[in-house]
Length: 246
Length: 222
Image (cartoon, rainbow over the protein chains, first blue to last red):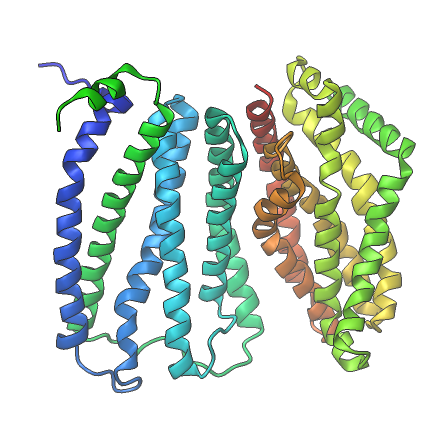
């Protein structure tokens, strides 16, 4: 039996596959999120240093992890689209970008909400916050570049080059910001939790991270379906879809 | 290859010299922006001395960014960019030539006038020397990174502001190490570490940026 590895590289075959997969990912995201939030809000113990306000990490940390992970995945798909000249890979990169930017924003926002009761400030120029802010700018730059080029294929390729330059830069930016921050260590704020995290806290964070991952996949698949419909408007298979009785 | 490089540099410098106003405006922008900050934060000398490295570097960054439009726009408008891309010479070498010419015309004047501006902020002499070195290492890097952004947005509407959004996050490491070097010098510490990393970033940029710029140019011109 010969396997066609690239069967789903065509928008026409991927579209129905994505449609079938979305409910599963959405459902697992919902279930995991309920489980994770339950773990985080009701099961995990009170932190001896920060009291109850630490519980926002169950949203903040998974969002931050996803923001970085999605950027790498997005750059990967963009690279695939650039190298193999496949439309669908670039569409996937464009579909991932808004979700990644959203998670970056959530991470920054929840970080601020956490910072106010614990450090007394909405924002500090800590290395991680600053790197996350710059990551948001990288996402916004990718989205802006895509939006400003009319020809979709040219937009795809230009965005891919930008995403790849960004992905090479992310470690450099992170390292330089960390250097900058340690040299300018002025405020005596402690960023880390108590070194050994209670097992339930860690478990809650991991479950929430998994939930966010499932959500990201579902959202990206749904978005890529919209992008496919927009870009492949002239295709016959879409016209046939419209004619099908629902 | 050296011939291509020499030709590109001399061509671009000659073209820039024919429009000296463009070049001068970048320089004056740097001076004006650096002078705006004291007007904004007040004339207190200690504050200005503390803020000077950052102010000078941000002004240099912004001036560099504004001059990026000139890198490919004129050649794109009259079709010579397309001919350069089609030429048998390696596009990366052409790009290096253009970037070097751009630096000679936009970056080097900034470096040369920076001691004068630094005096306005009452930076100590050691810090001014470090500033010169840091800008000498940093401004070519700014031109190299900026070239990627300029190549991606050739002929795109909303060009100028879009380039800023693309390129400023990538400028951040240069800013951090450049300003950090001057800051260290002003505090009496050794700036060798910062300058070394800046040099390393410059080498990395010299190798990778022309390649990325060439790829971006090919994408923009198809």
